Length: 98
Image (cartoon, rainbow, N blue to C red):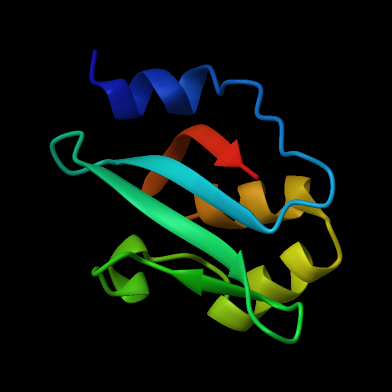
C-alpha cells in the first residue's frame, strides 16, 4: 500500500504549538508518494502567508483558495487548515511549529 493511501485511511494526530509563528506541513502526494513541504509563516503584520517552497500551490489542487487557508490560520483554526490542505491531491504526514 502506498504511503499516500495509508495516510488517507489512517490520518495521524497533528498538534500545532499555540501561538505559533511558523508552521511547516510535510505532505505526501498521491503521485508516486512524492514528499513536499508547505509553510505557513507570519509576516510583519502578524498575518500567515502560505508558501509552497518552490512549488506552485495550484499543483496541490486544494479545494479552497490560498487566502481562505491563510485566514483560517490567522484565526488559529488549525483543524480547518488541515482539512483544507488534505482536500487536495496531497495528505499531511507530519507538522512542525514554532
